[in-house]
Image 1 (cartoon, rainbow, N blue to C red):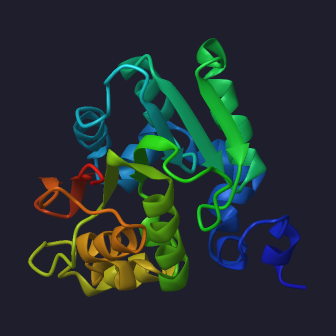
Image 2: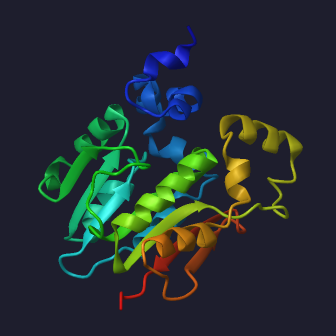
Image 3: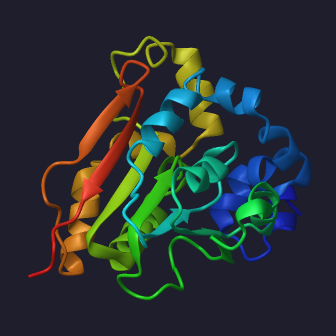
Length: 241
């Protein structure tokens, strides 16, 4: 039996197959949740990306925020420190939820954790004022991304927003991308990244929103980092007529 099958405890097959060592294995969870490791993976850009993300958080009173999947590092506690609002956090992996709870015990009354697949959320329609996605899409195959866009469009309210921090479009001019050895290694560690690089995030989200009778107000606010290798995008929705 292939090793990854030992981790198929209600998680998507692609997650267990390609990322068991990073997100499901307890020693992997321990190892990767160290700030120097995370910062190294992001080529020293973690703090810049975090700061840019937090600057775009919804802070209006009584807003409900959804963070789609747990992430390593200090995003979740920093998010809760940046707003007094209610934050919901869902992930399909129980180990990740346990880790998130340990980081948020002091604000547990405002941080609601649930085990859910981002492709099939259990929340009602129009439940959240903002949905936050931090380095998730590039770790999903195309169909999973499609389903997740659809769920985001369903649960975000008209006049709400979607905040996506991710790799930018194919960075053909970046010195890292020009290194064949780097592309080979990254392509093996992140098998779905090449497909995401080519994906038009704005178009995909807009299409999903239109199916829900929703629309964007205008083009997204985009802030680039590391010579356009990463980007932080905030999409604002129009009020429903």
